[in-house]
Length: 141
Image (cartoon, rainbow, N blue to C red; front, side, top):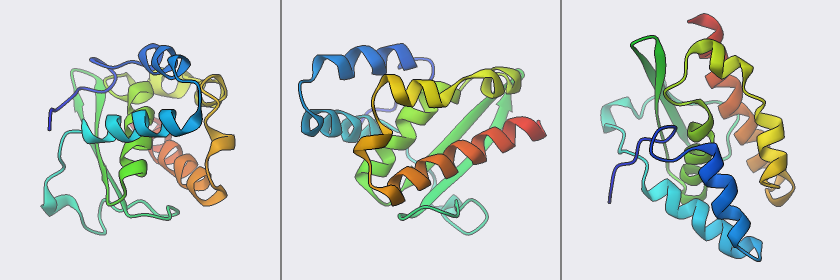
């Protein structure tokens, strides 16, 4: 499994372009799952309640640190599709300043890739919880 720097190696533009190649959502889901396989592994010691994201159907853990004024997120999930959704979200927010995180219009991005209407309501709520957690981190920074 390769490790990819989401937000640097893969950007929101890359996601938008690649999803545009696929004719149906089954292929798009496979691509999103493949993105999740490229997420760097999170150390098992962080897979605990301190990093657990509430409001998700699956277990999701998110941590962060700052690197030269930019937020760097580490995330993982016990579900393949959710790892993929985390990867999509990280393309928008990883390696960005707190101001860039807060300025990014994630709803427009999700609309551009036609994502929300292709998720179950619980997955959609979990996706929004991921975004809220990351935005709260940026607001606190």
